Amino acid sequence: MLYLQLFISFFKIGLFGFGGGLAILSLIQMEVESHGWMTQQEFVDIVAVSQVTPGPIGINCATYVGYTTAGIWGSVLATTAIVLPSLIIMLSICKAYFWLSNHFRGNPYFEQTLRMLRFTVIGLVAAAALLLIKPTTFIDPVSWIIFGVVAMLTIMPSVMENLKIRKAVEFLSHPILLIVLAGIAGYAIYS
Amino acid sequence: MFLQLFWTYLKIGTFTLGGGYAMLPLIQREVVDRKRWIDEEEFLNMIALAQAAPGLIAVNSAIFIGWRVGGWRGVCGAVLGAVLPSFLIILTIAMVFSDWKELPAVEAVFKGIRPAVVALIAAPLVKMAKTATKSKAESRKSKAALPLLLSLAVALLIWLGHVNPVWVILATIIVTLIVVKWKMDN
Image 1 (cartoon, helix red, strand yellow):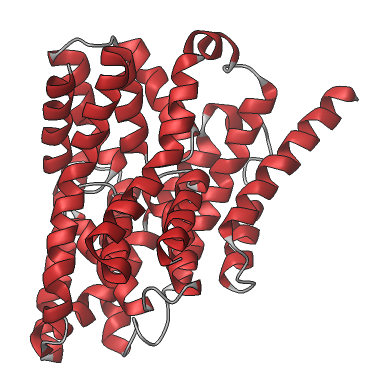
Image 2: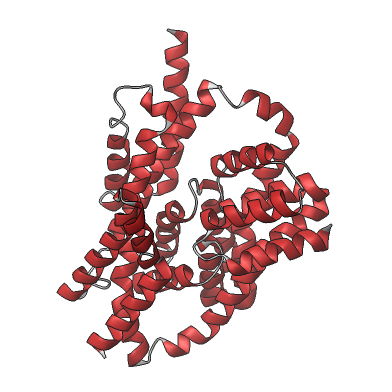
């Protein structure tokens, strides 16, 4: 039964996961929390681990949740389940590729749906962040300082005009570097 | 072909941090520039389709290129290569993490990391909103900021209303199709 639930949940995430990694987060969070497979802290921690390890965030979450709920076979099953919808849909797209490449550009149904989904995805990412602002993740004012500094450093390169300064900030705003620095700050402050 | 695709994607999968989008330039260098399996234009079409289709972008692109280059065997090789590195790394971490996370030092480190992760999720929103409203399709229209209300509504529905994102996505698709049909009929 657990295997079946795992399969259905991650199949759903793969099937409705439009817009890539960050947009998929709110879907995963809803699924794993409604089943009680992961606490919110665990979820944030695995997202943190995903940011510093290679590979798609969806695969990382599927593997982790699968393992912690149902062992190695659980992780194999969850990972397979999240890939399966892609396999079905992308292979159909490949088979219809020549037809599609002539028809999908300029088709108002297709283009409008993609355009609106782009805005829905922005909402999904915002929701993923908002859902994580809880006392378990933001334990004191220091948490908000860390949040502010990391957010600022990440936003700066995209609003910067001067190319030289932008290059420097871009280096500083690398997610791995920021996570490592936040980890060091956490160790210094809380231990 | 199975082995070649497996090996190429294994390399890409092992050395890219930051998920699907970060993988795209590496895929382009390996598959278009070096191996010449597909040309530039087909690669751009591939990105458009891999993003439009649901699922992980890295996996979607692996399926497309695997199929174009080596049929079924190509698909198996590319997908396994793309998935296996992160699967094995996370499996190893999951096995040891349950023992480590009780350690006070590890807990202290993660206390610092958690708000940073939330910031890393939230910060790209600025860029996403900018690109979404400034894309070619939007600049033709004067009311470019209006759809951002949809984004806001989606965020509130999920955050405060605890609506499952699946319903929000389905509703977006269905309502858009109905509106386009209605506009074309009139």
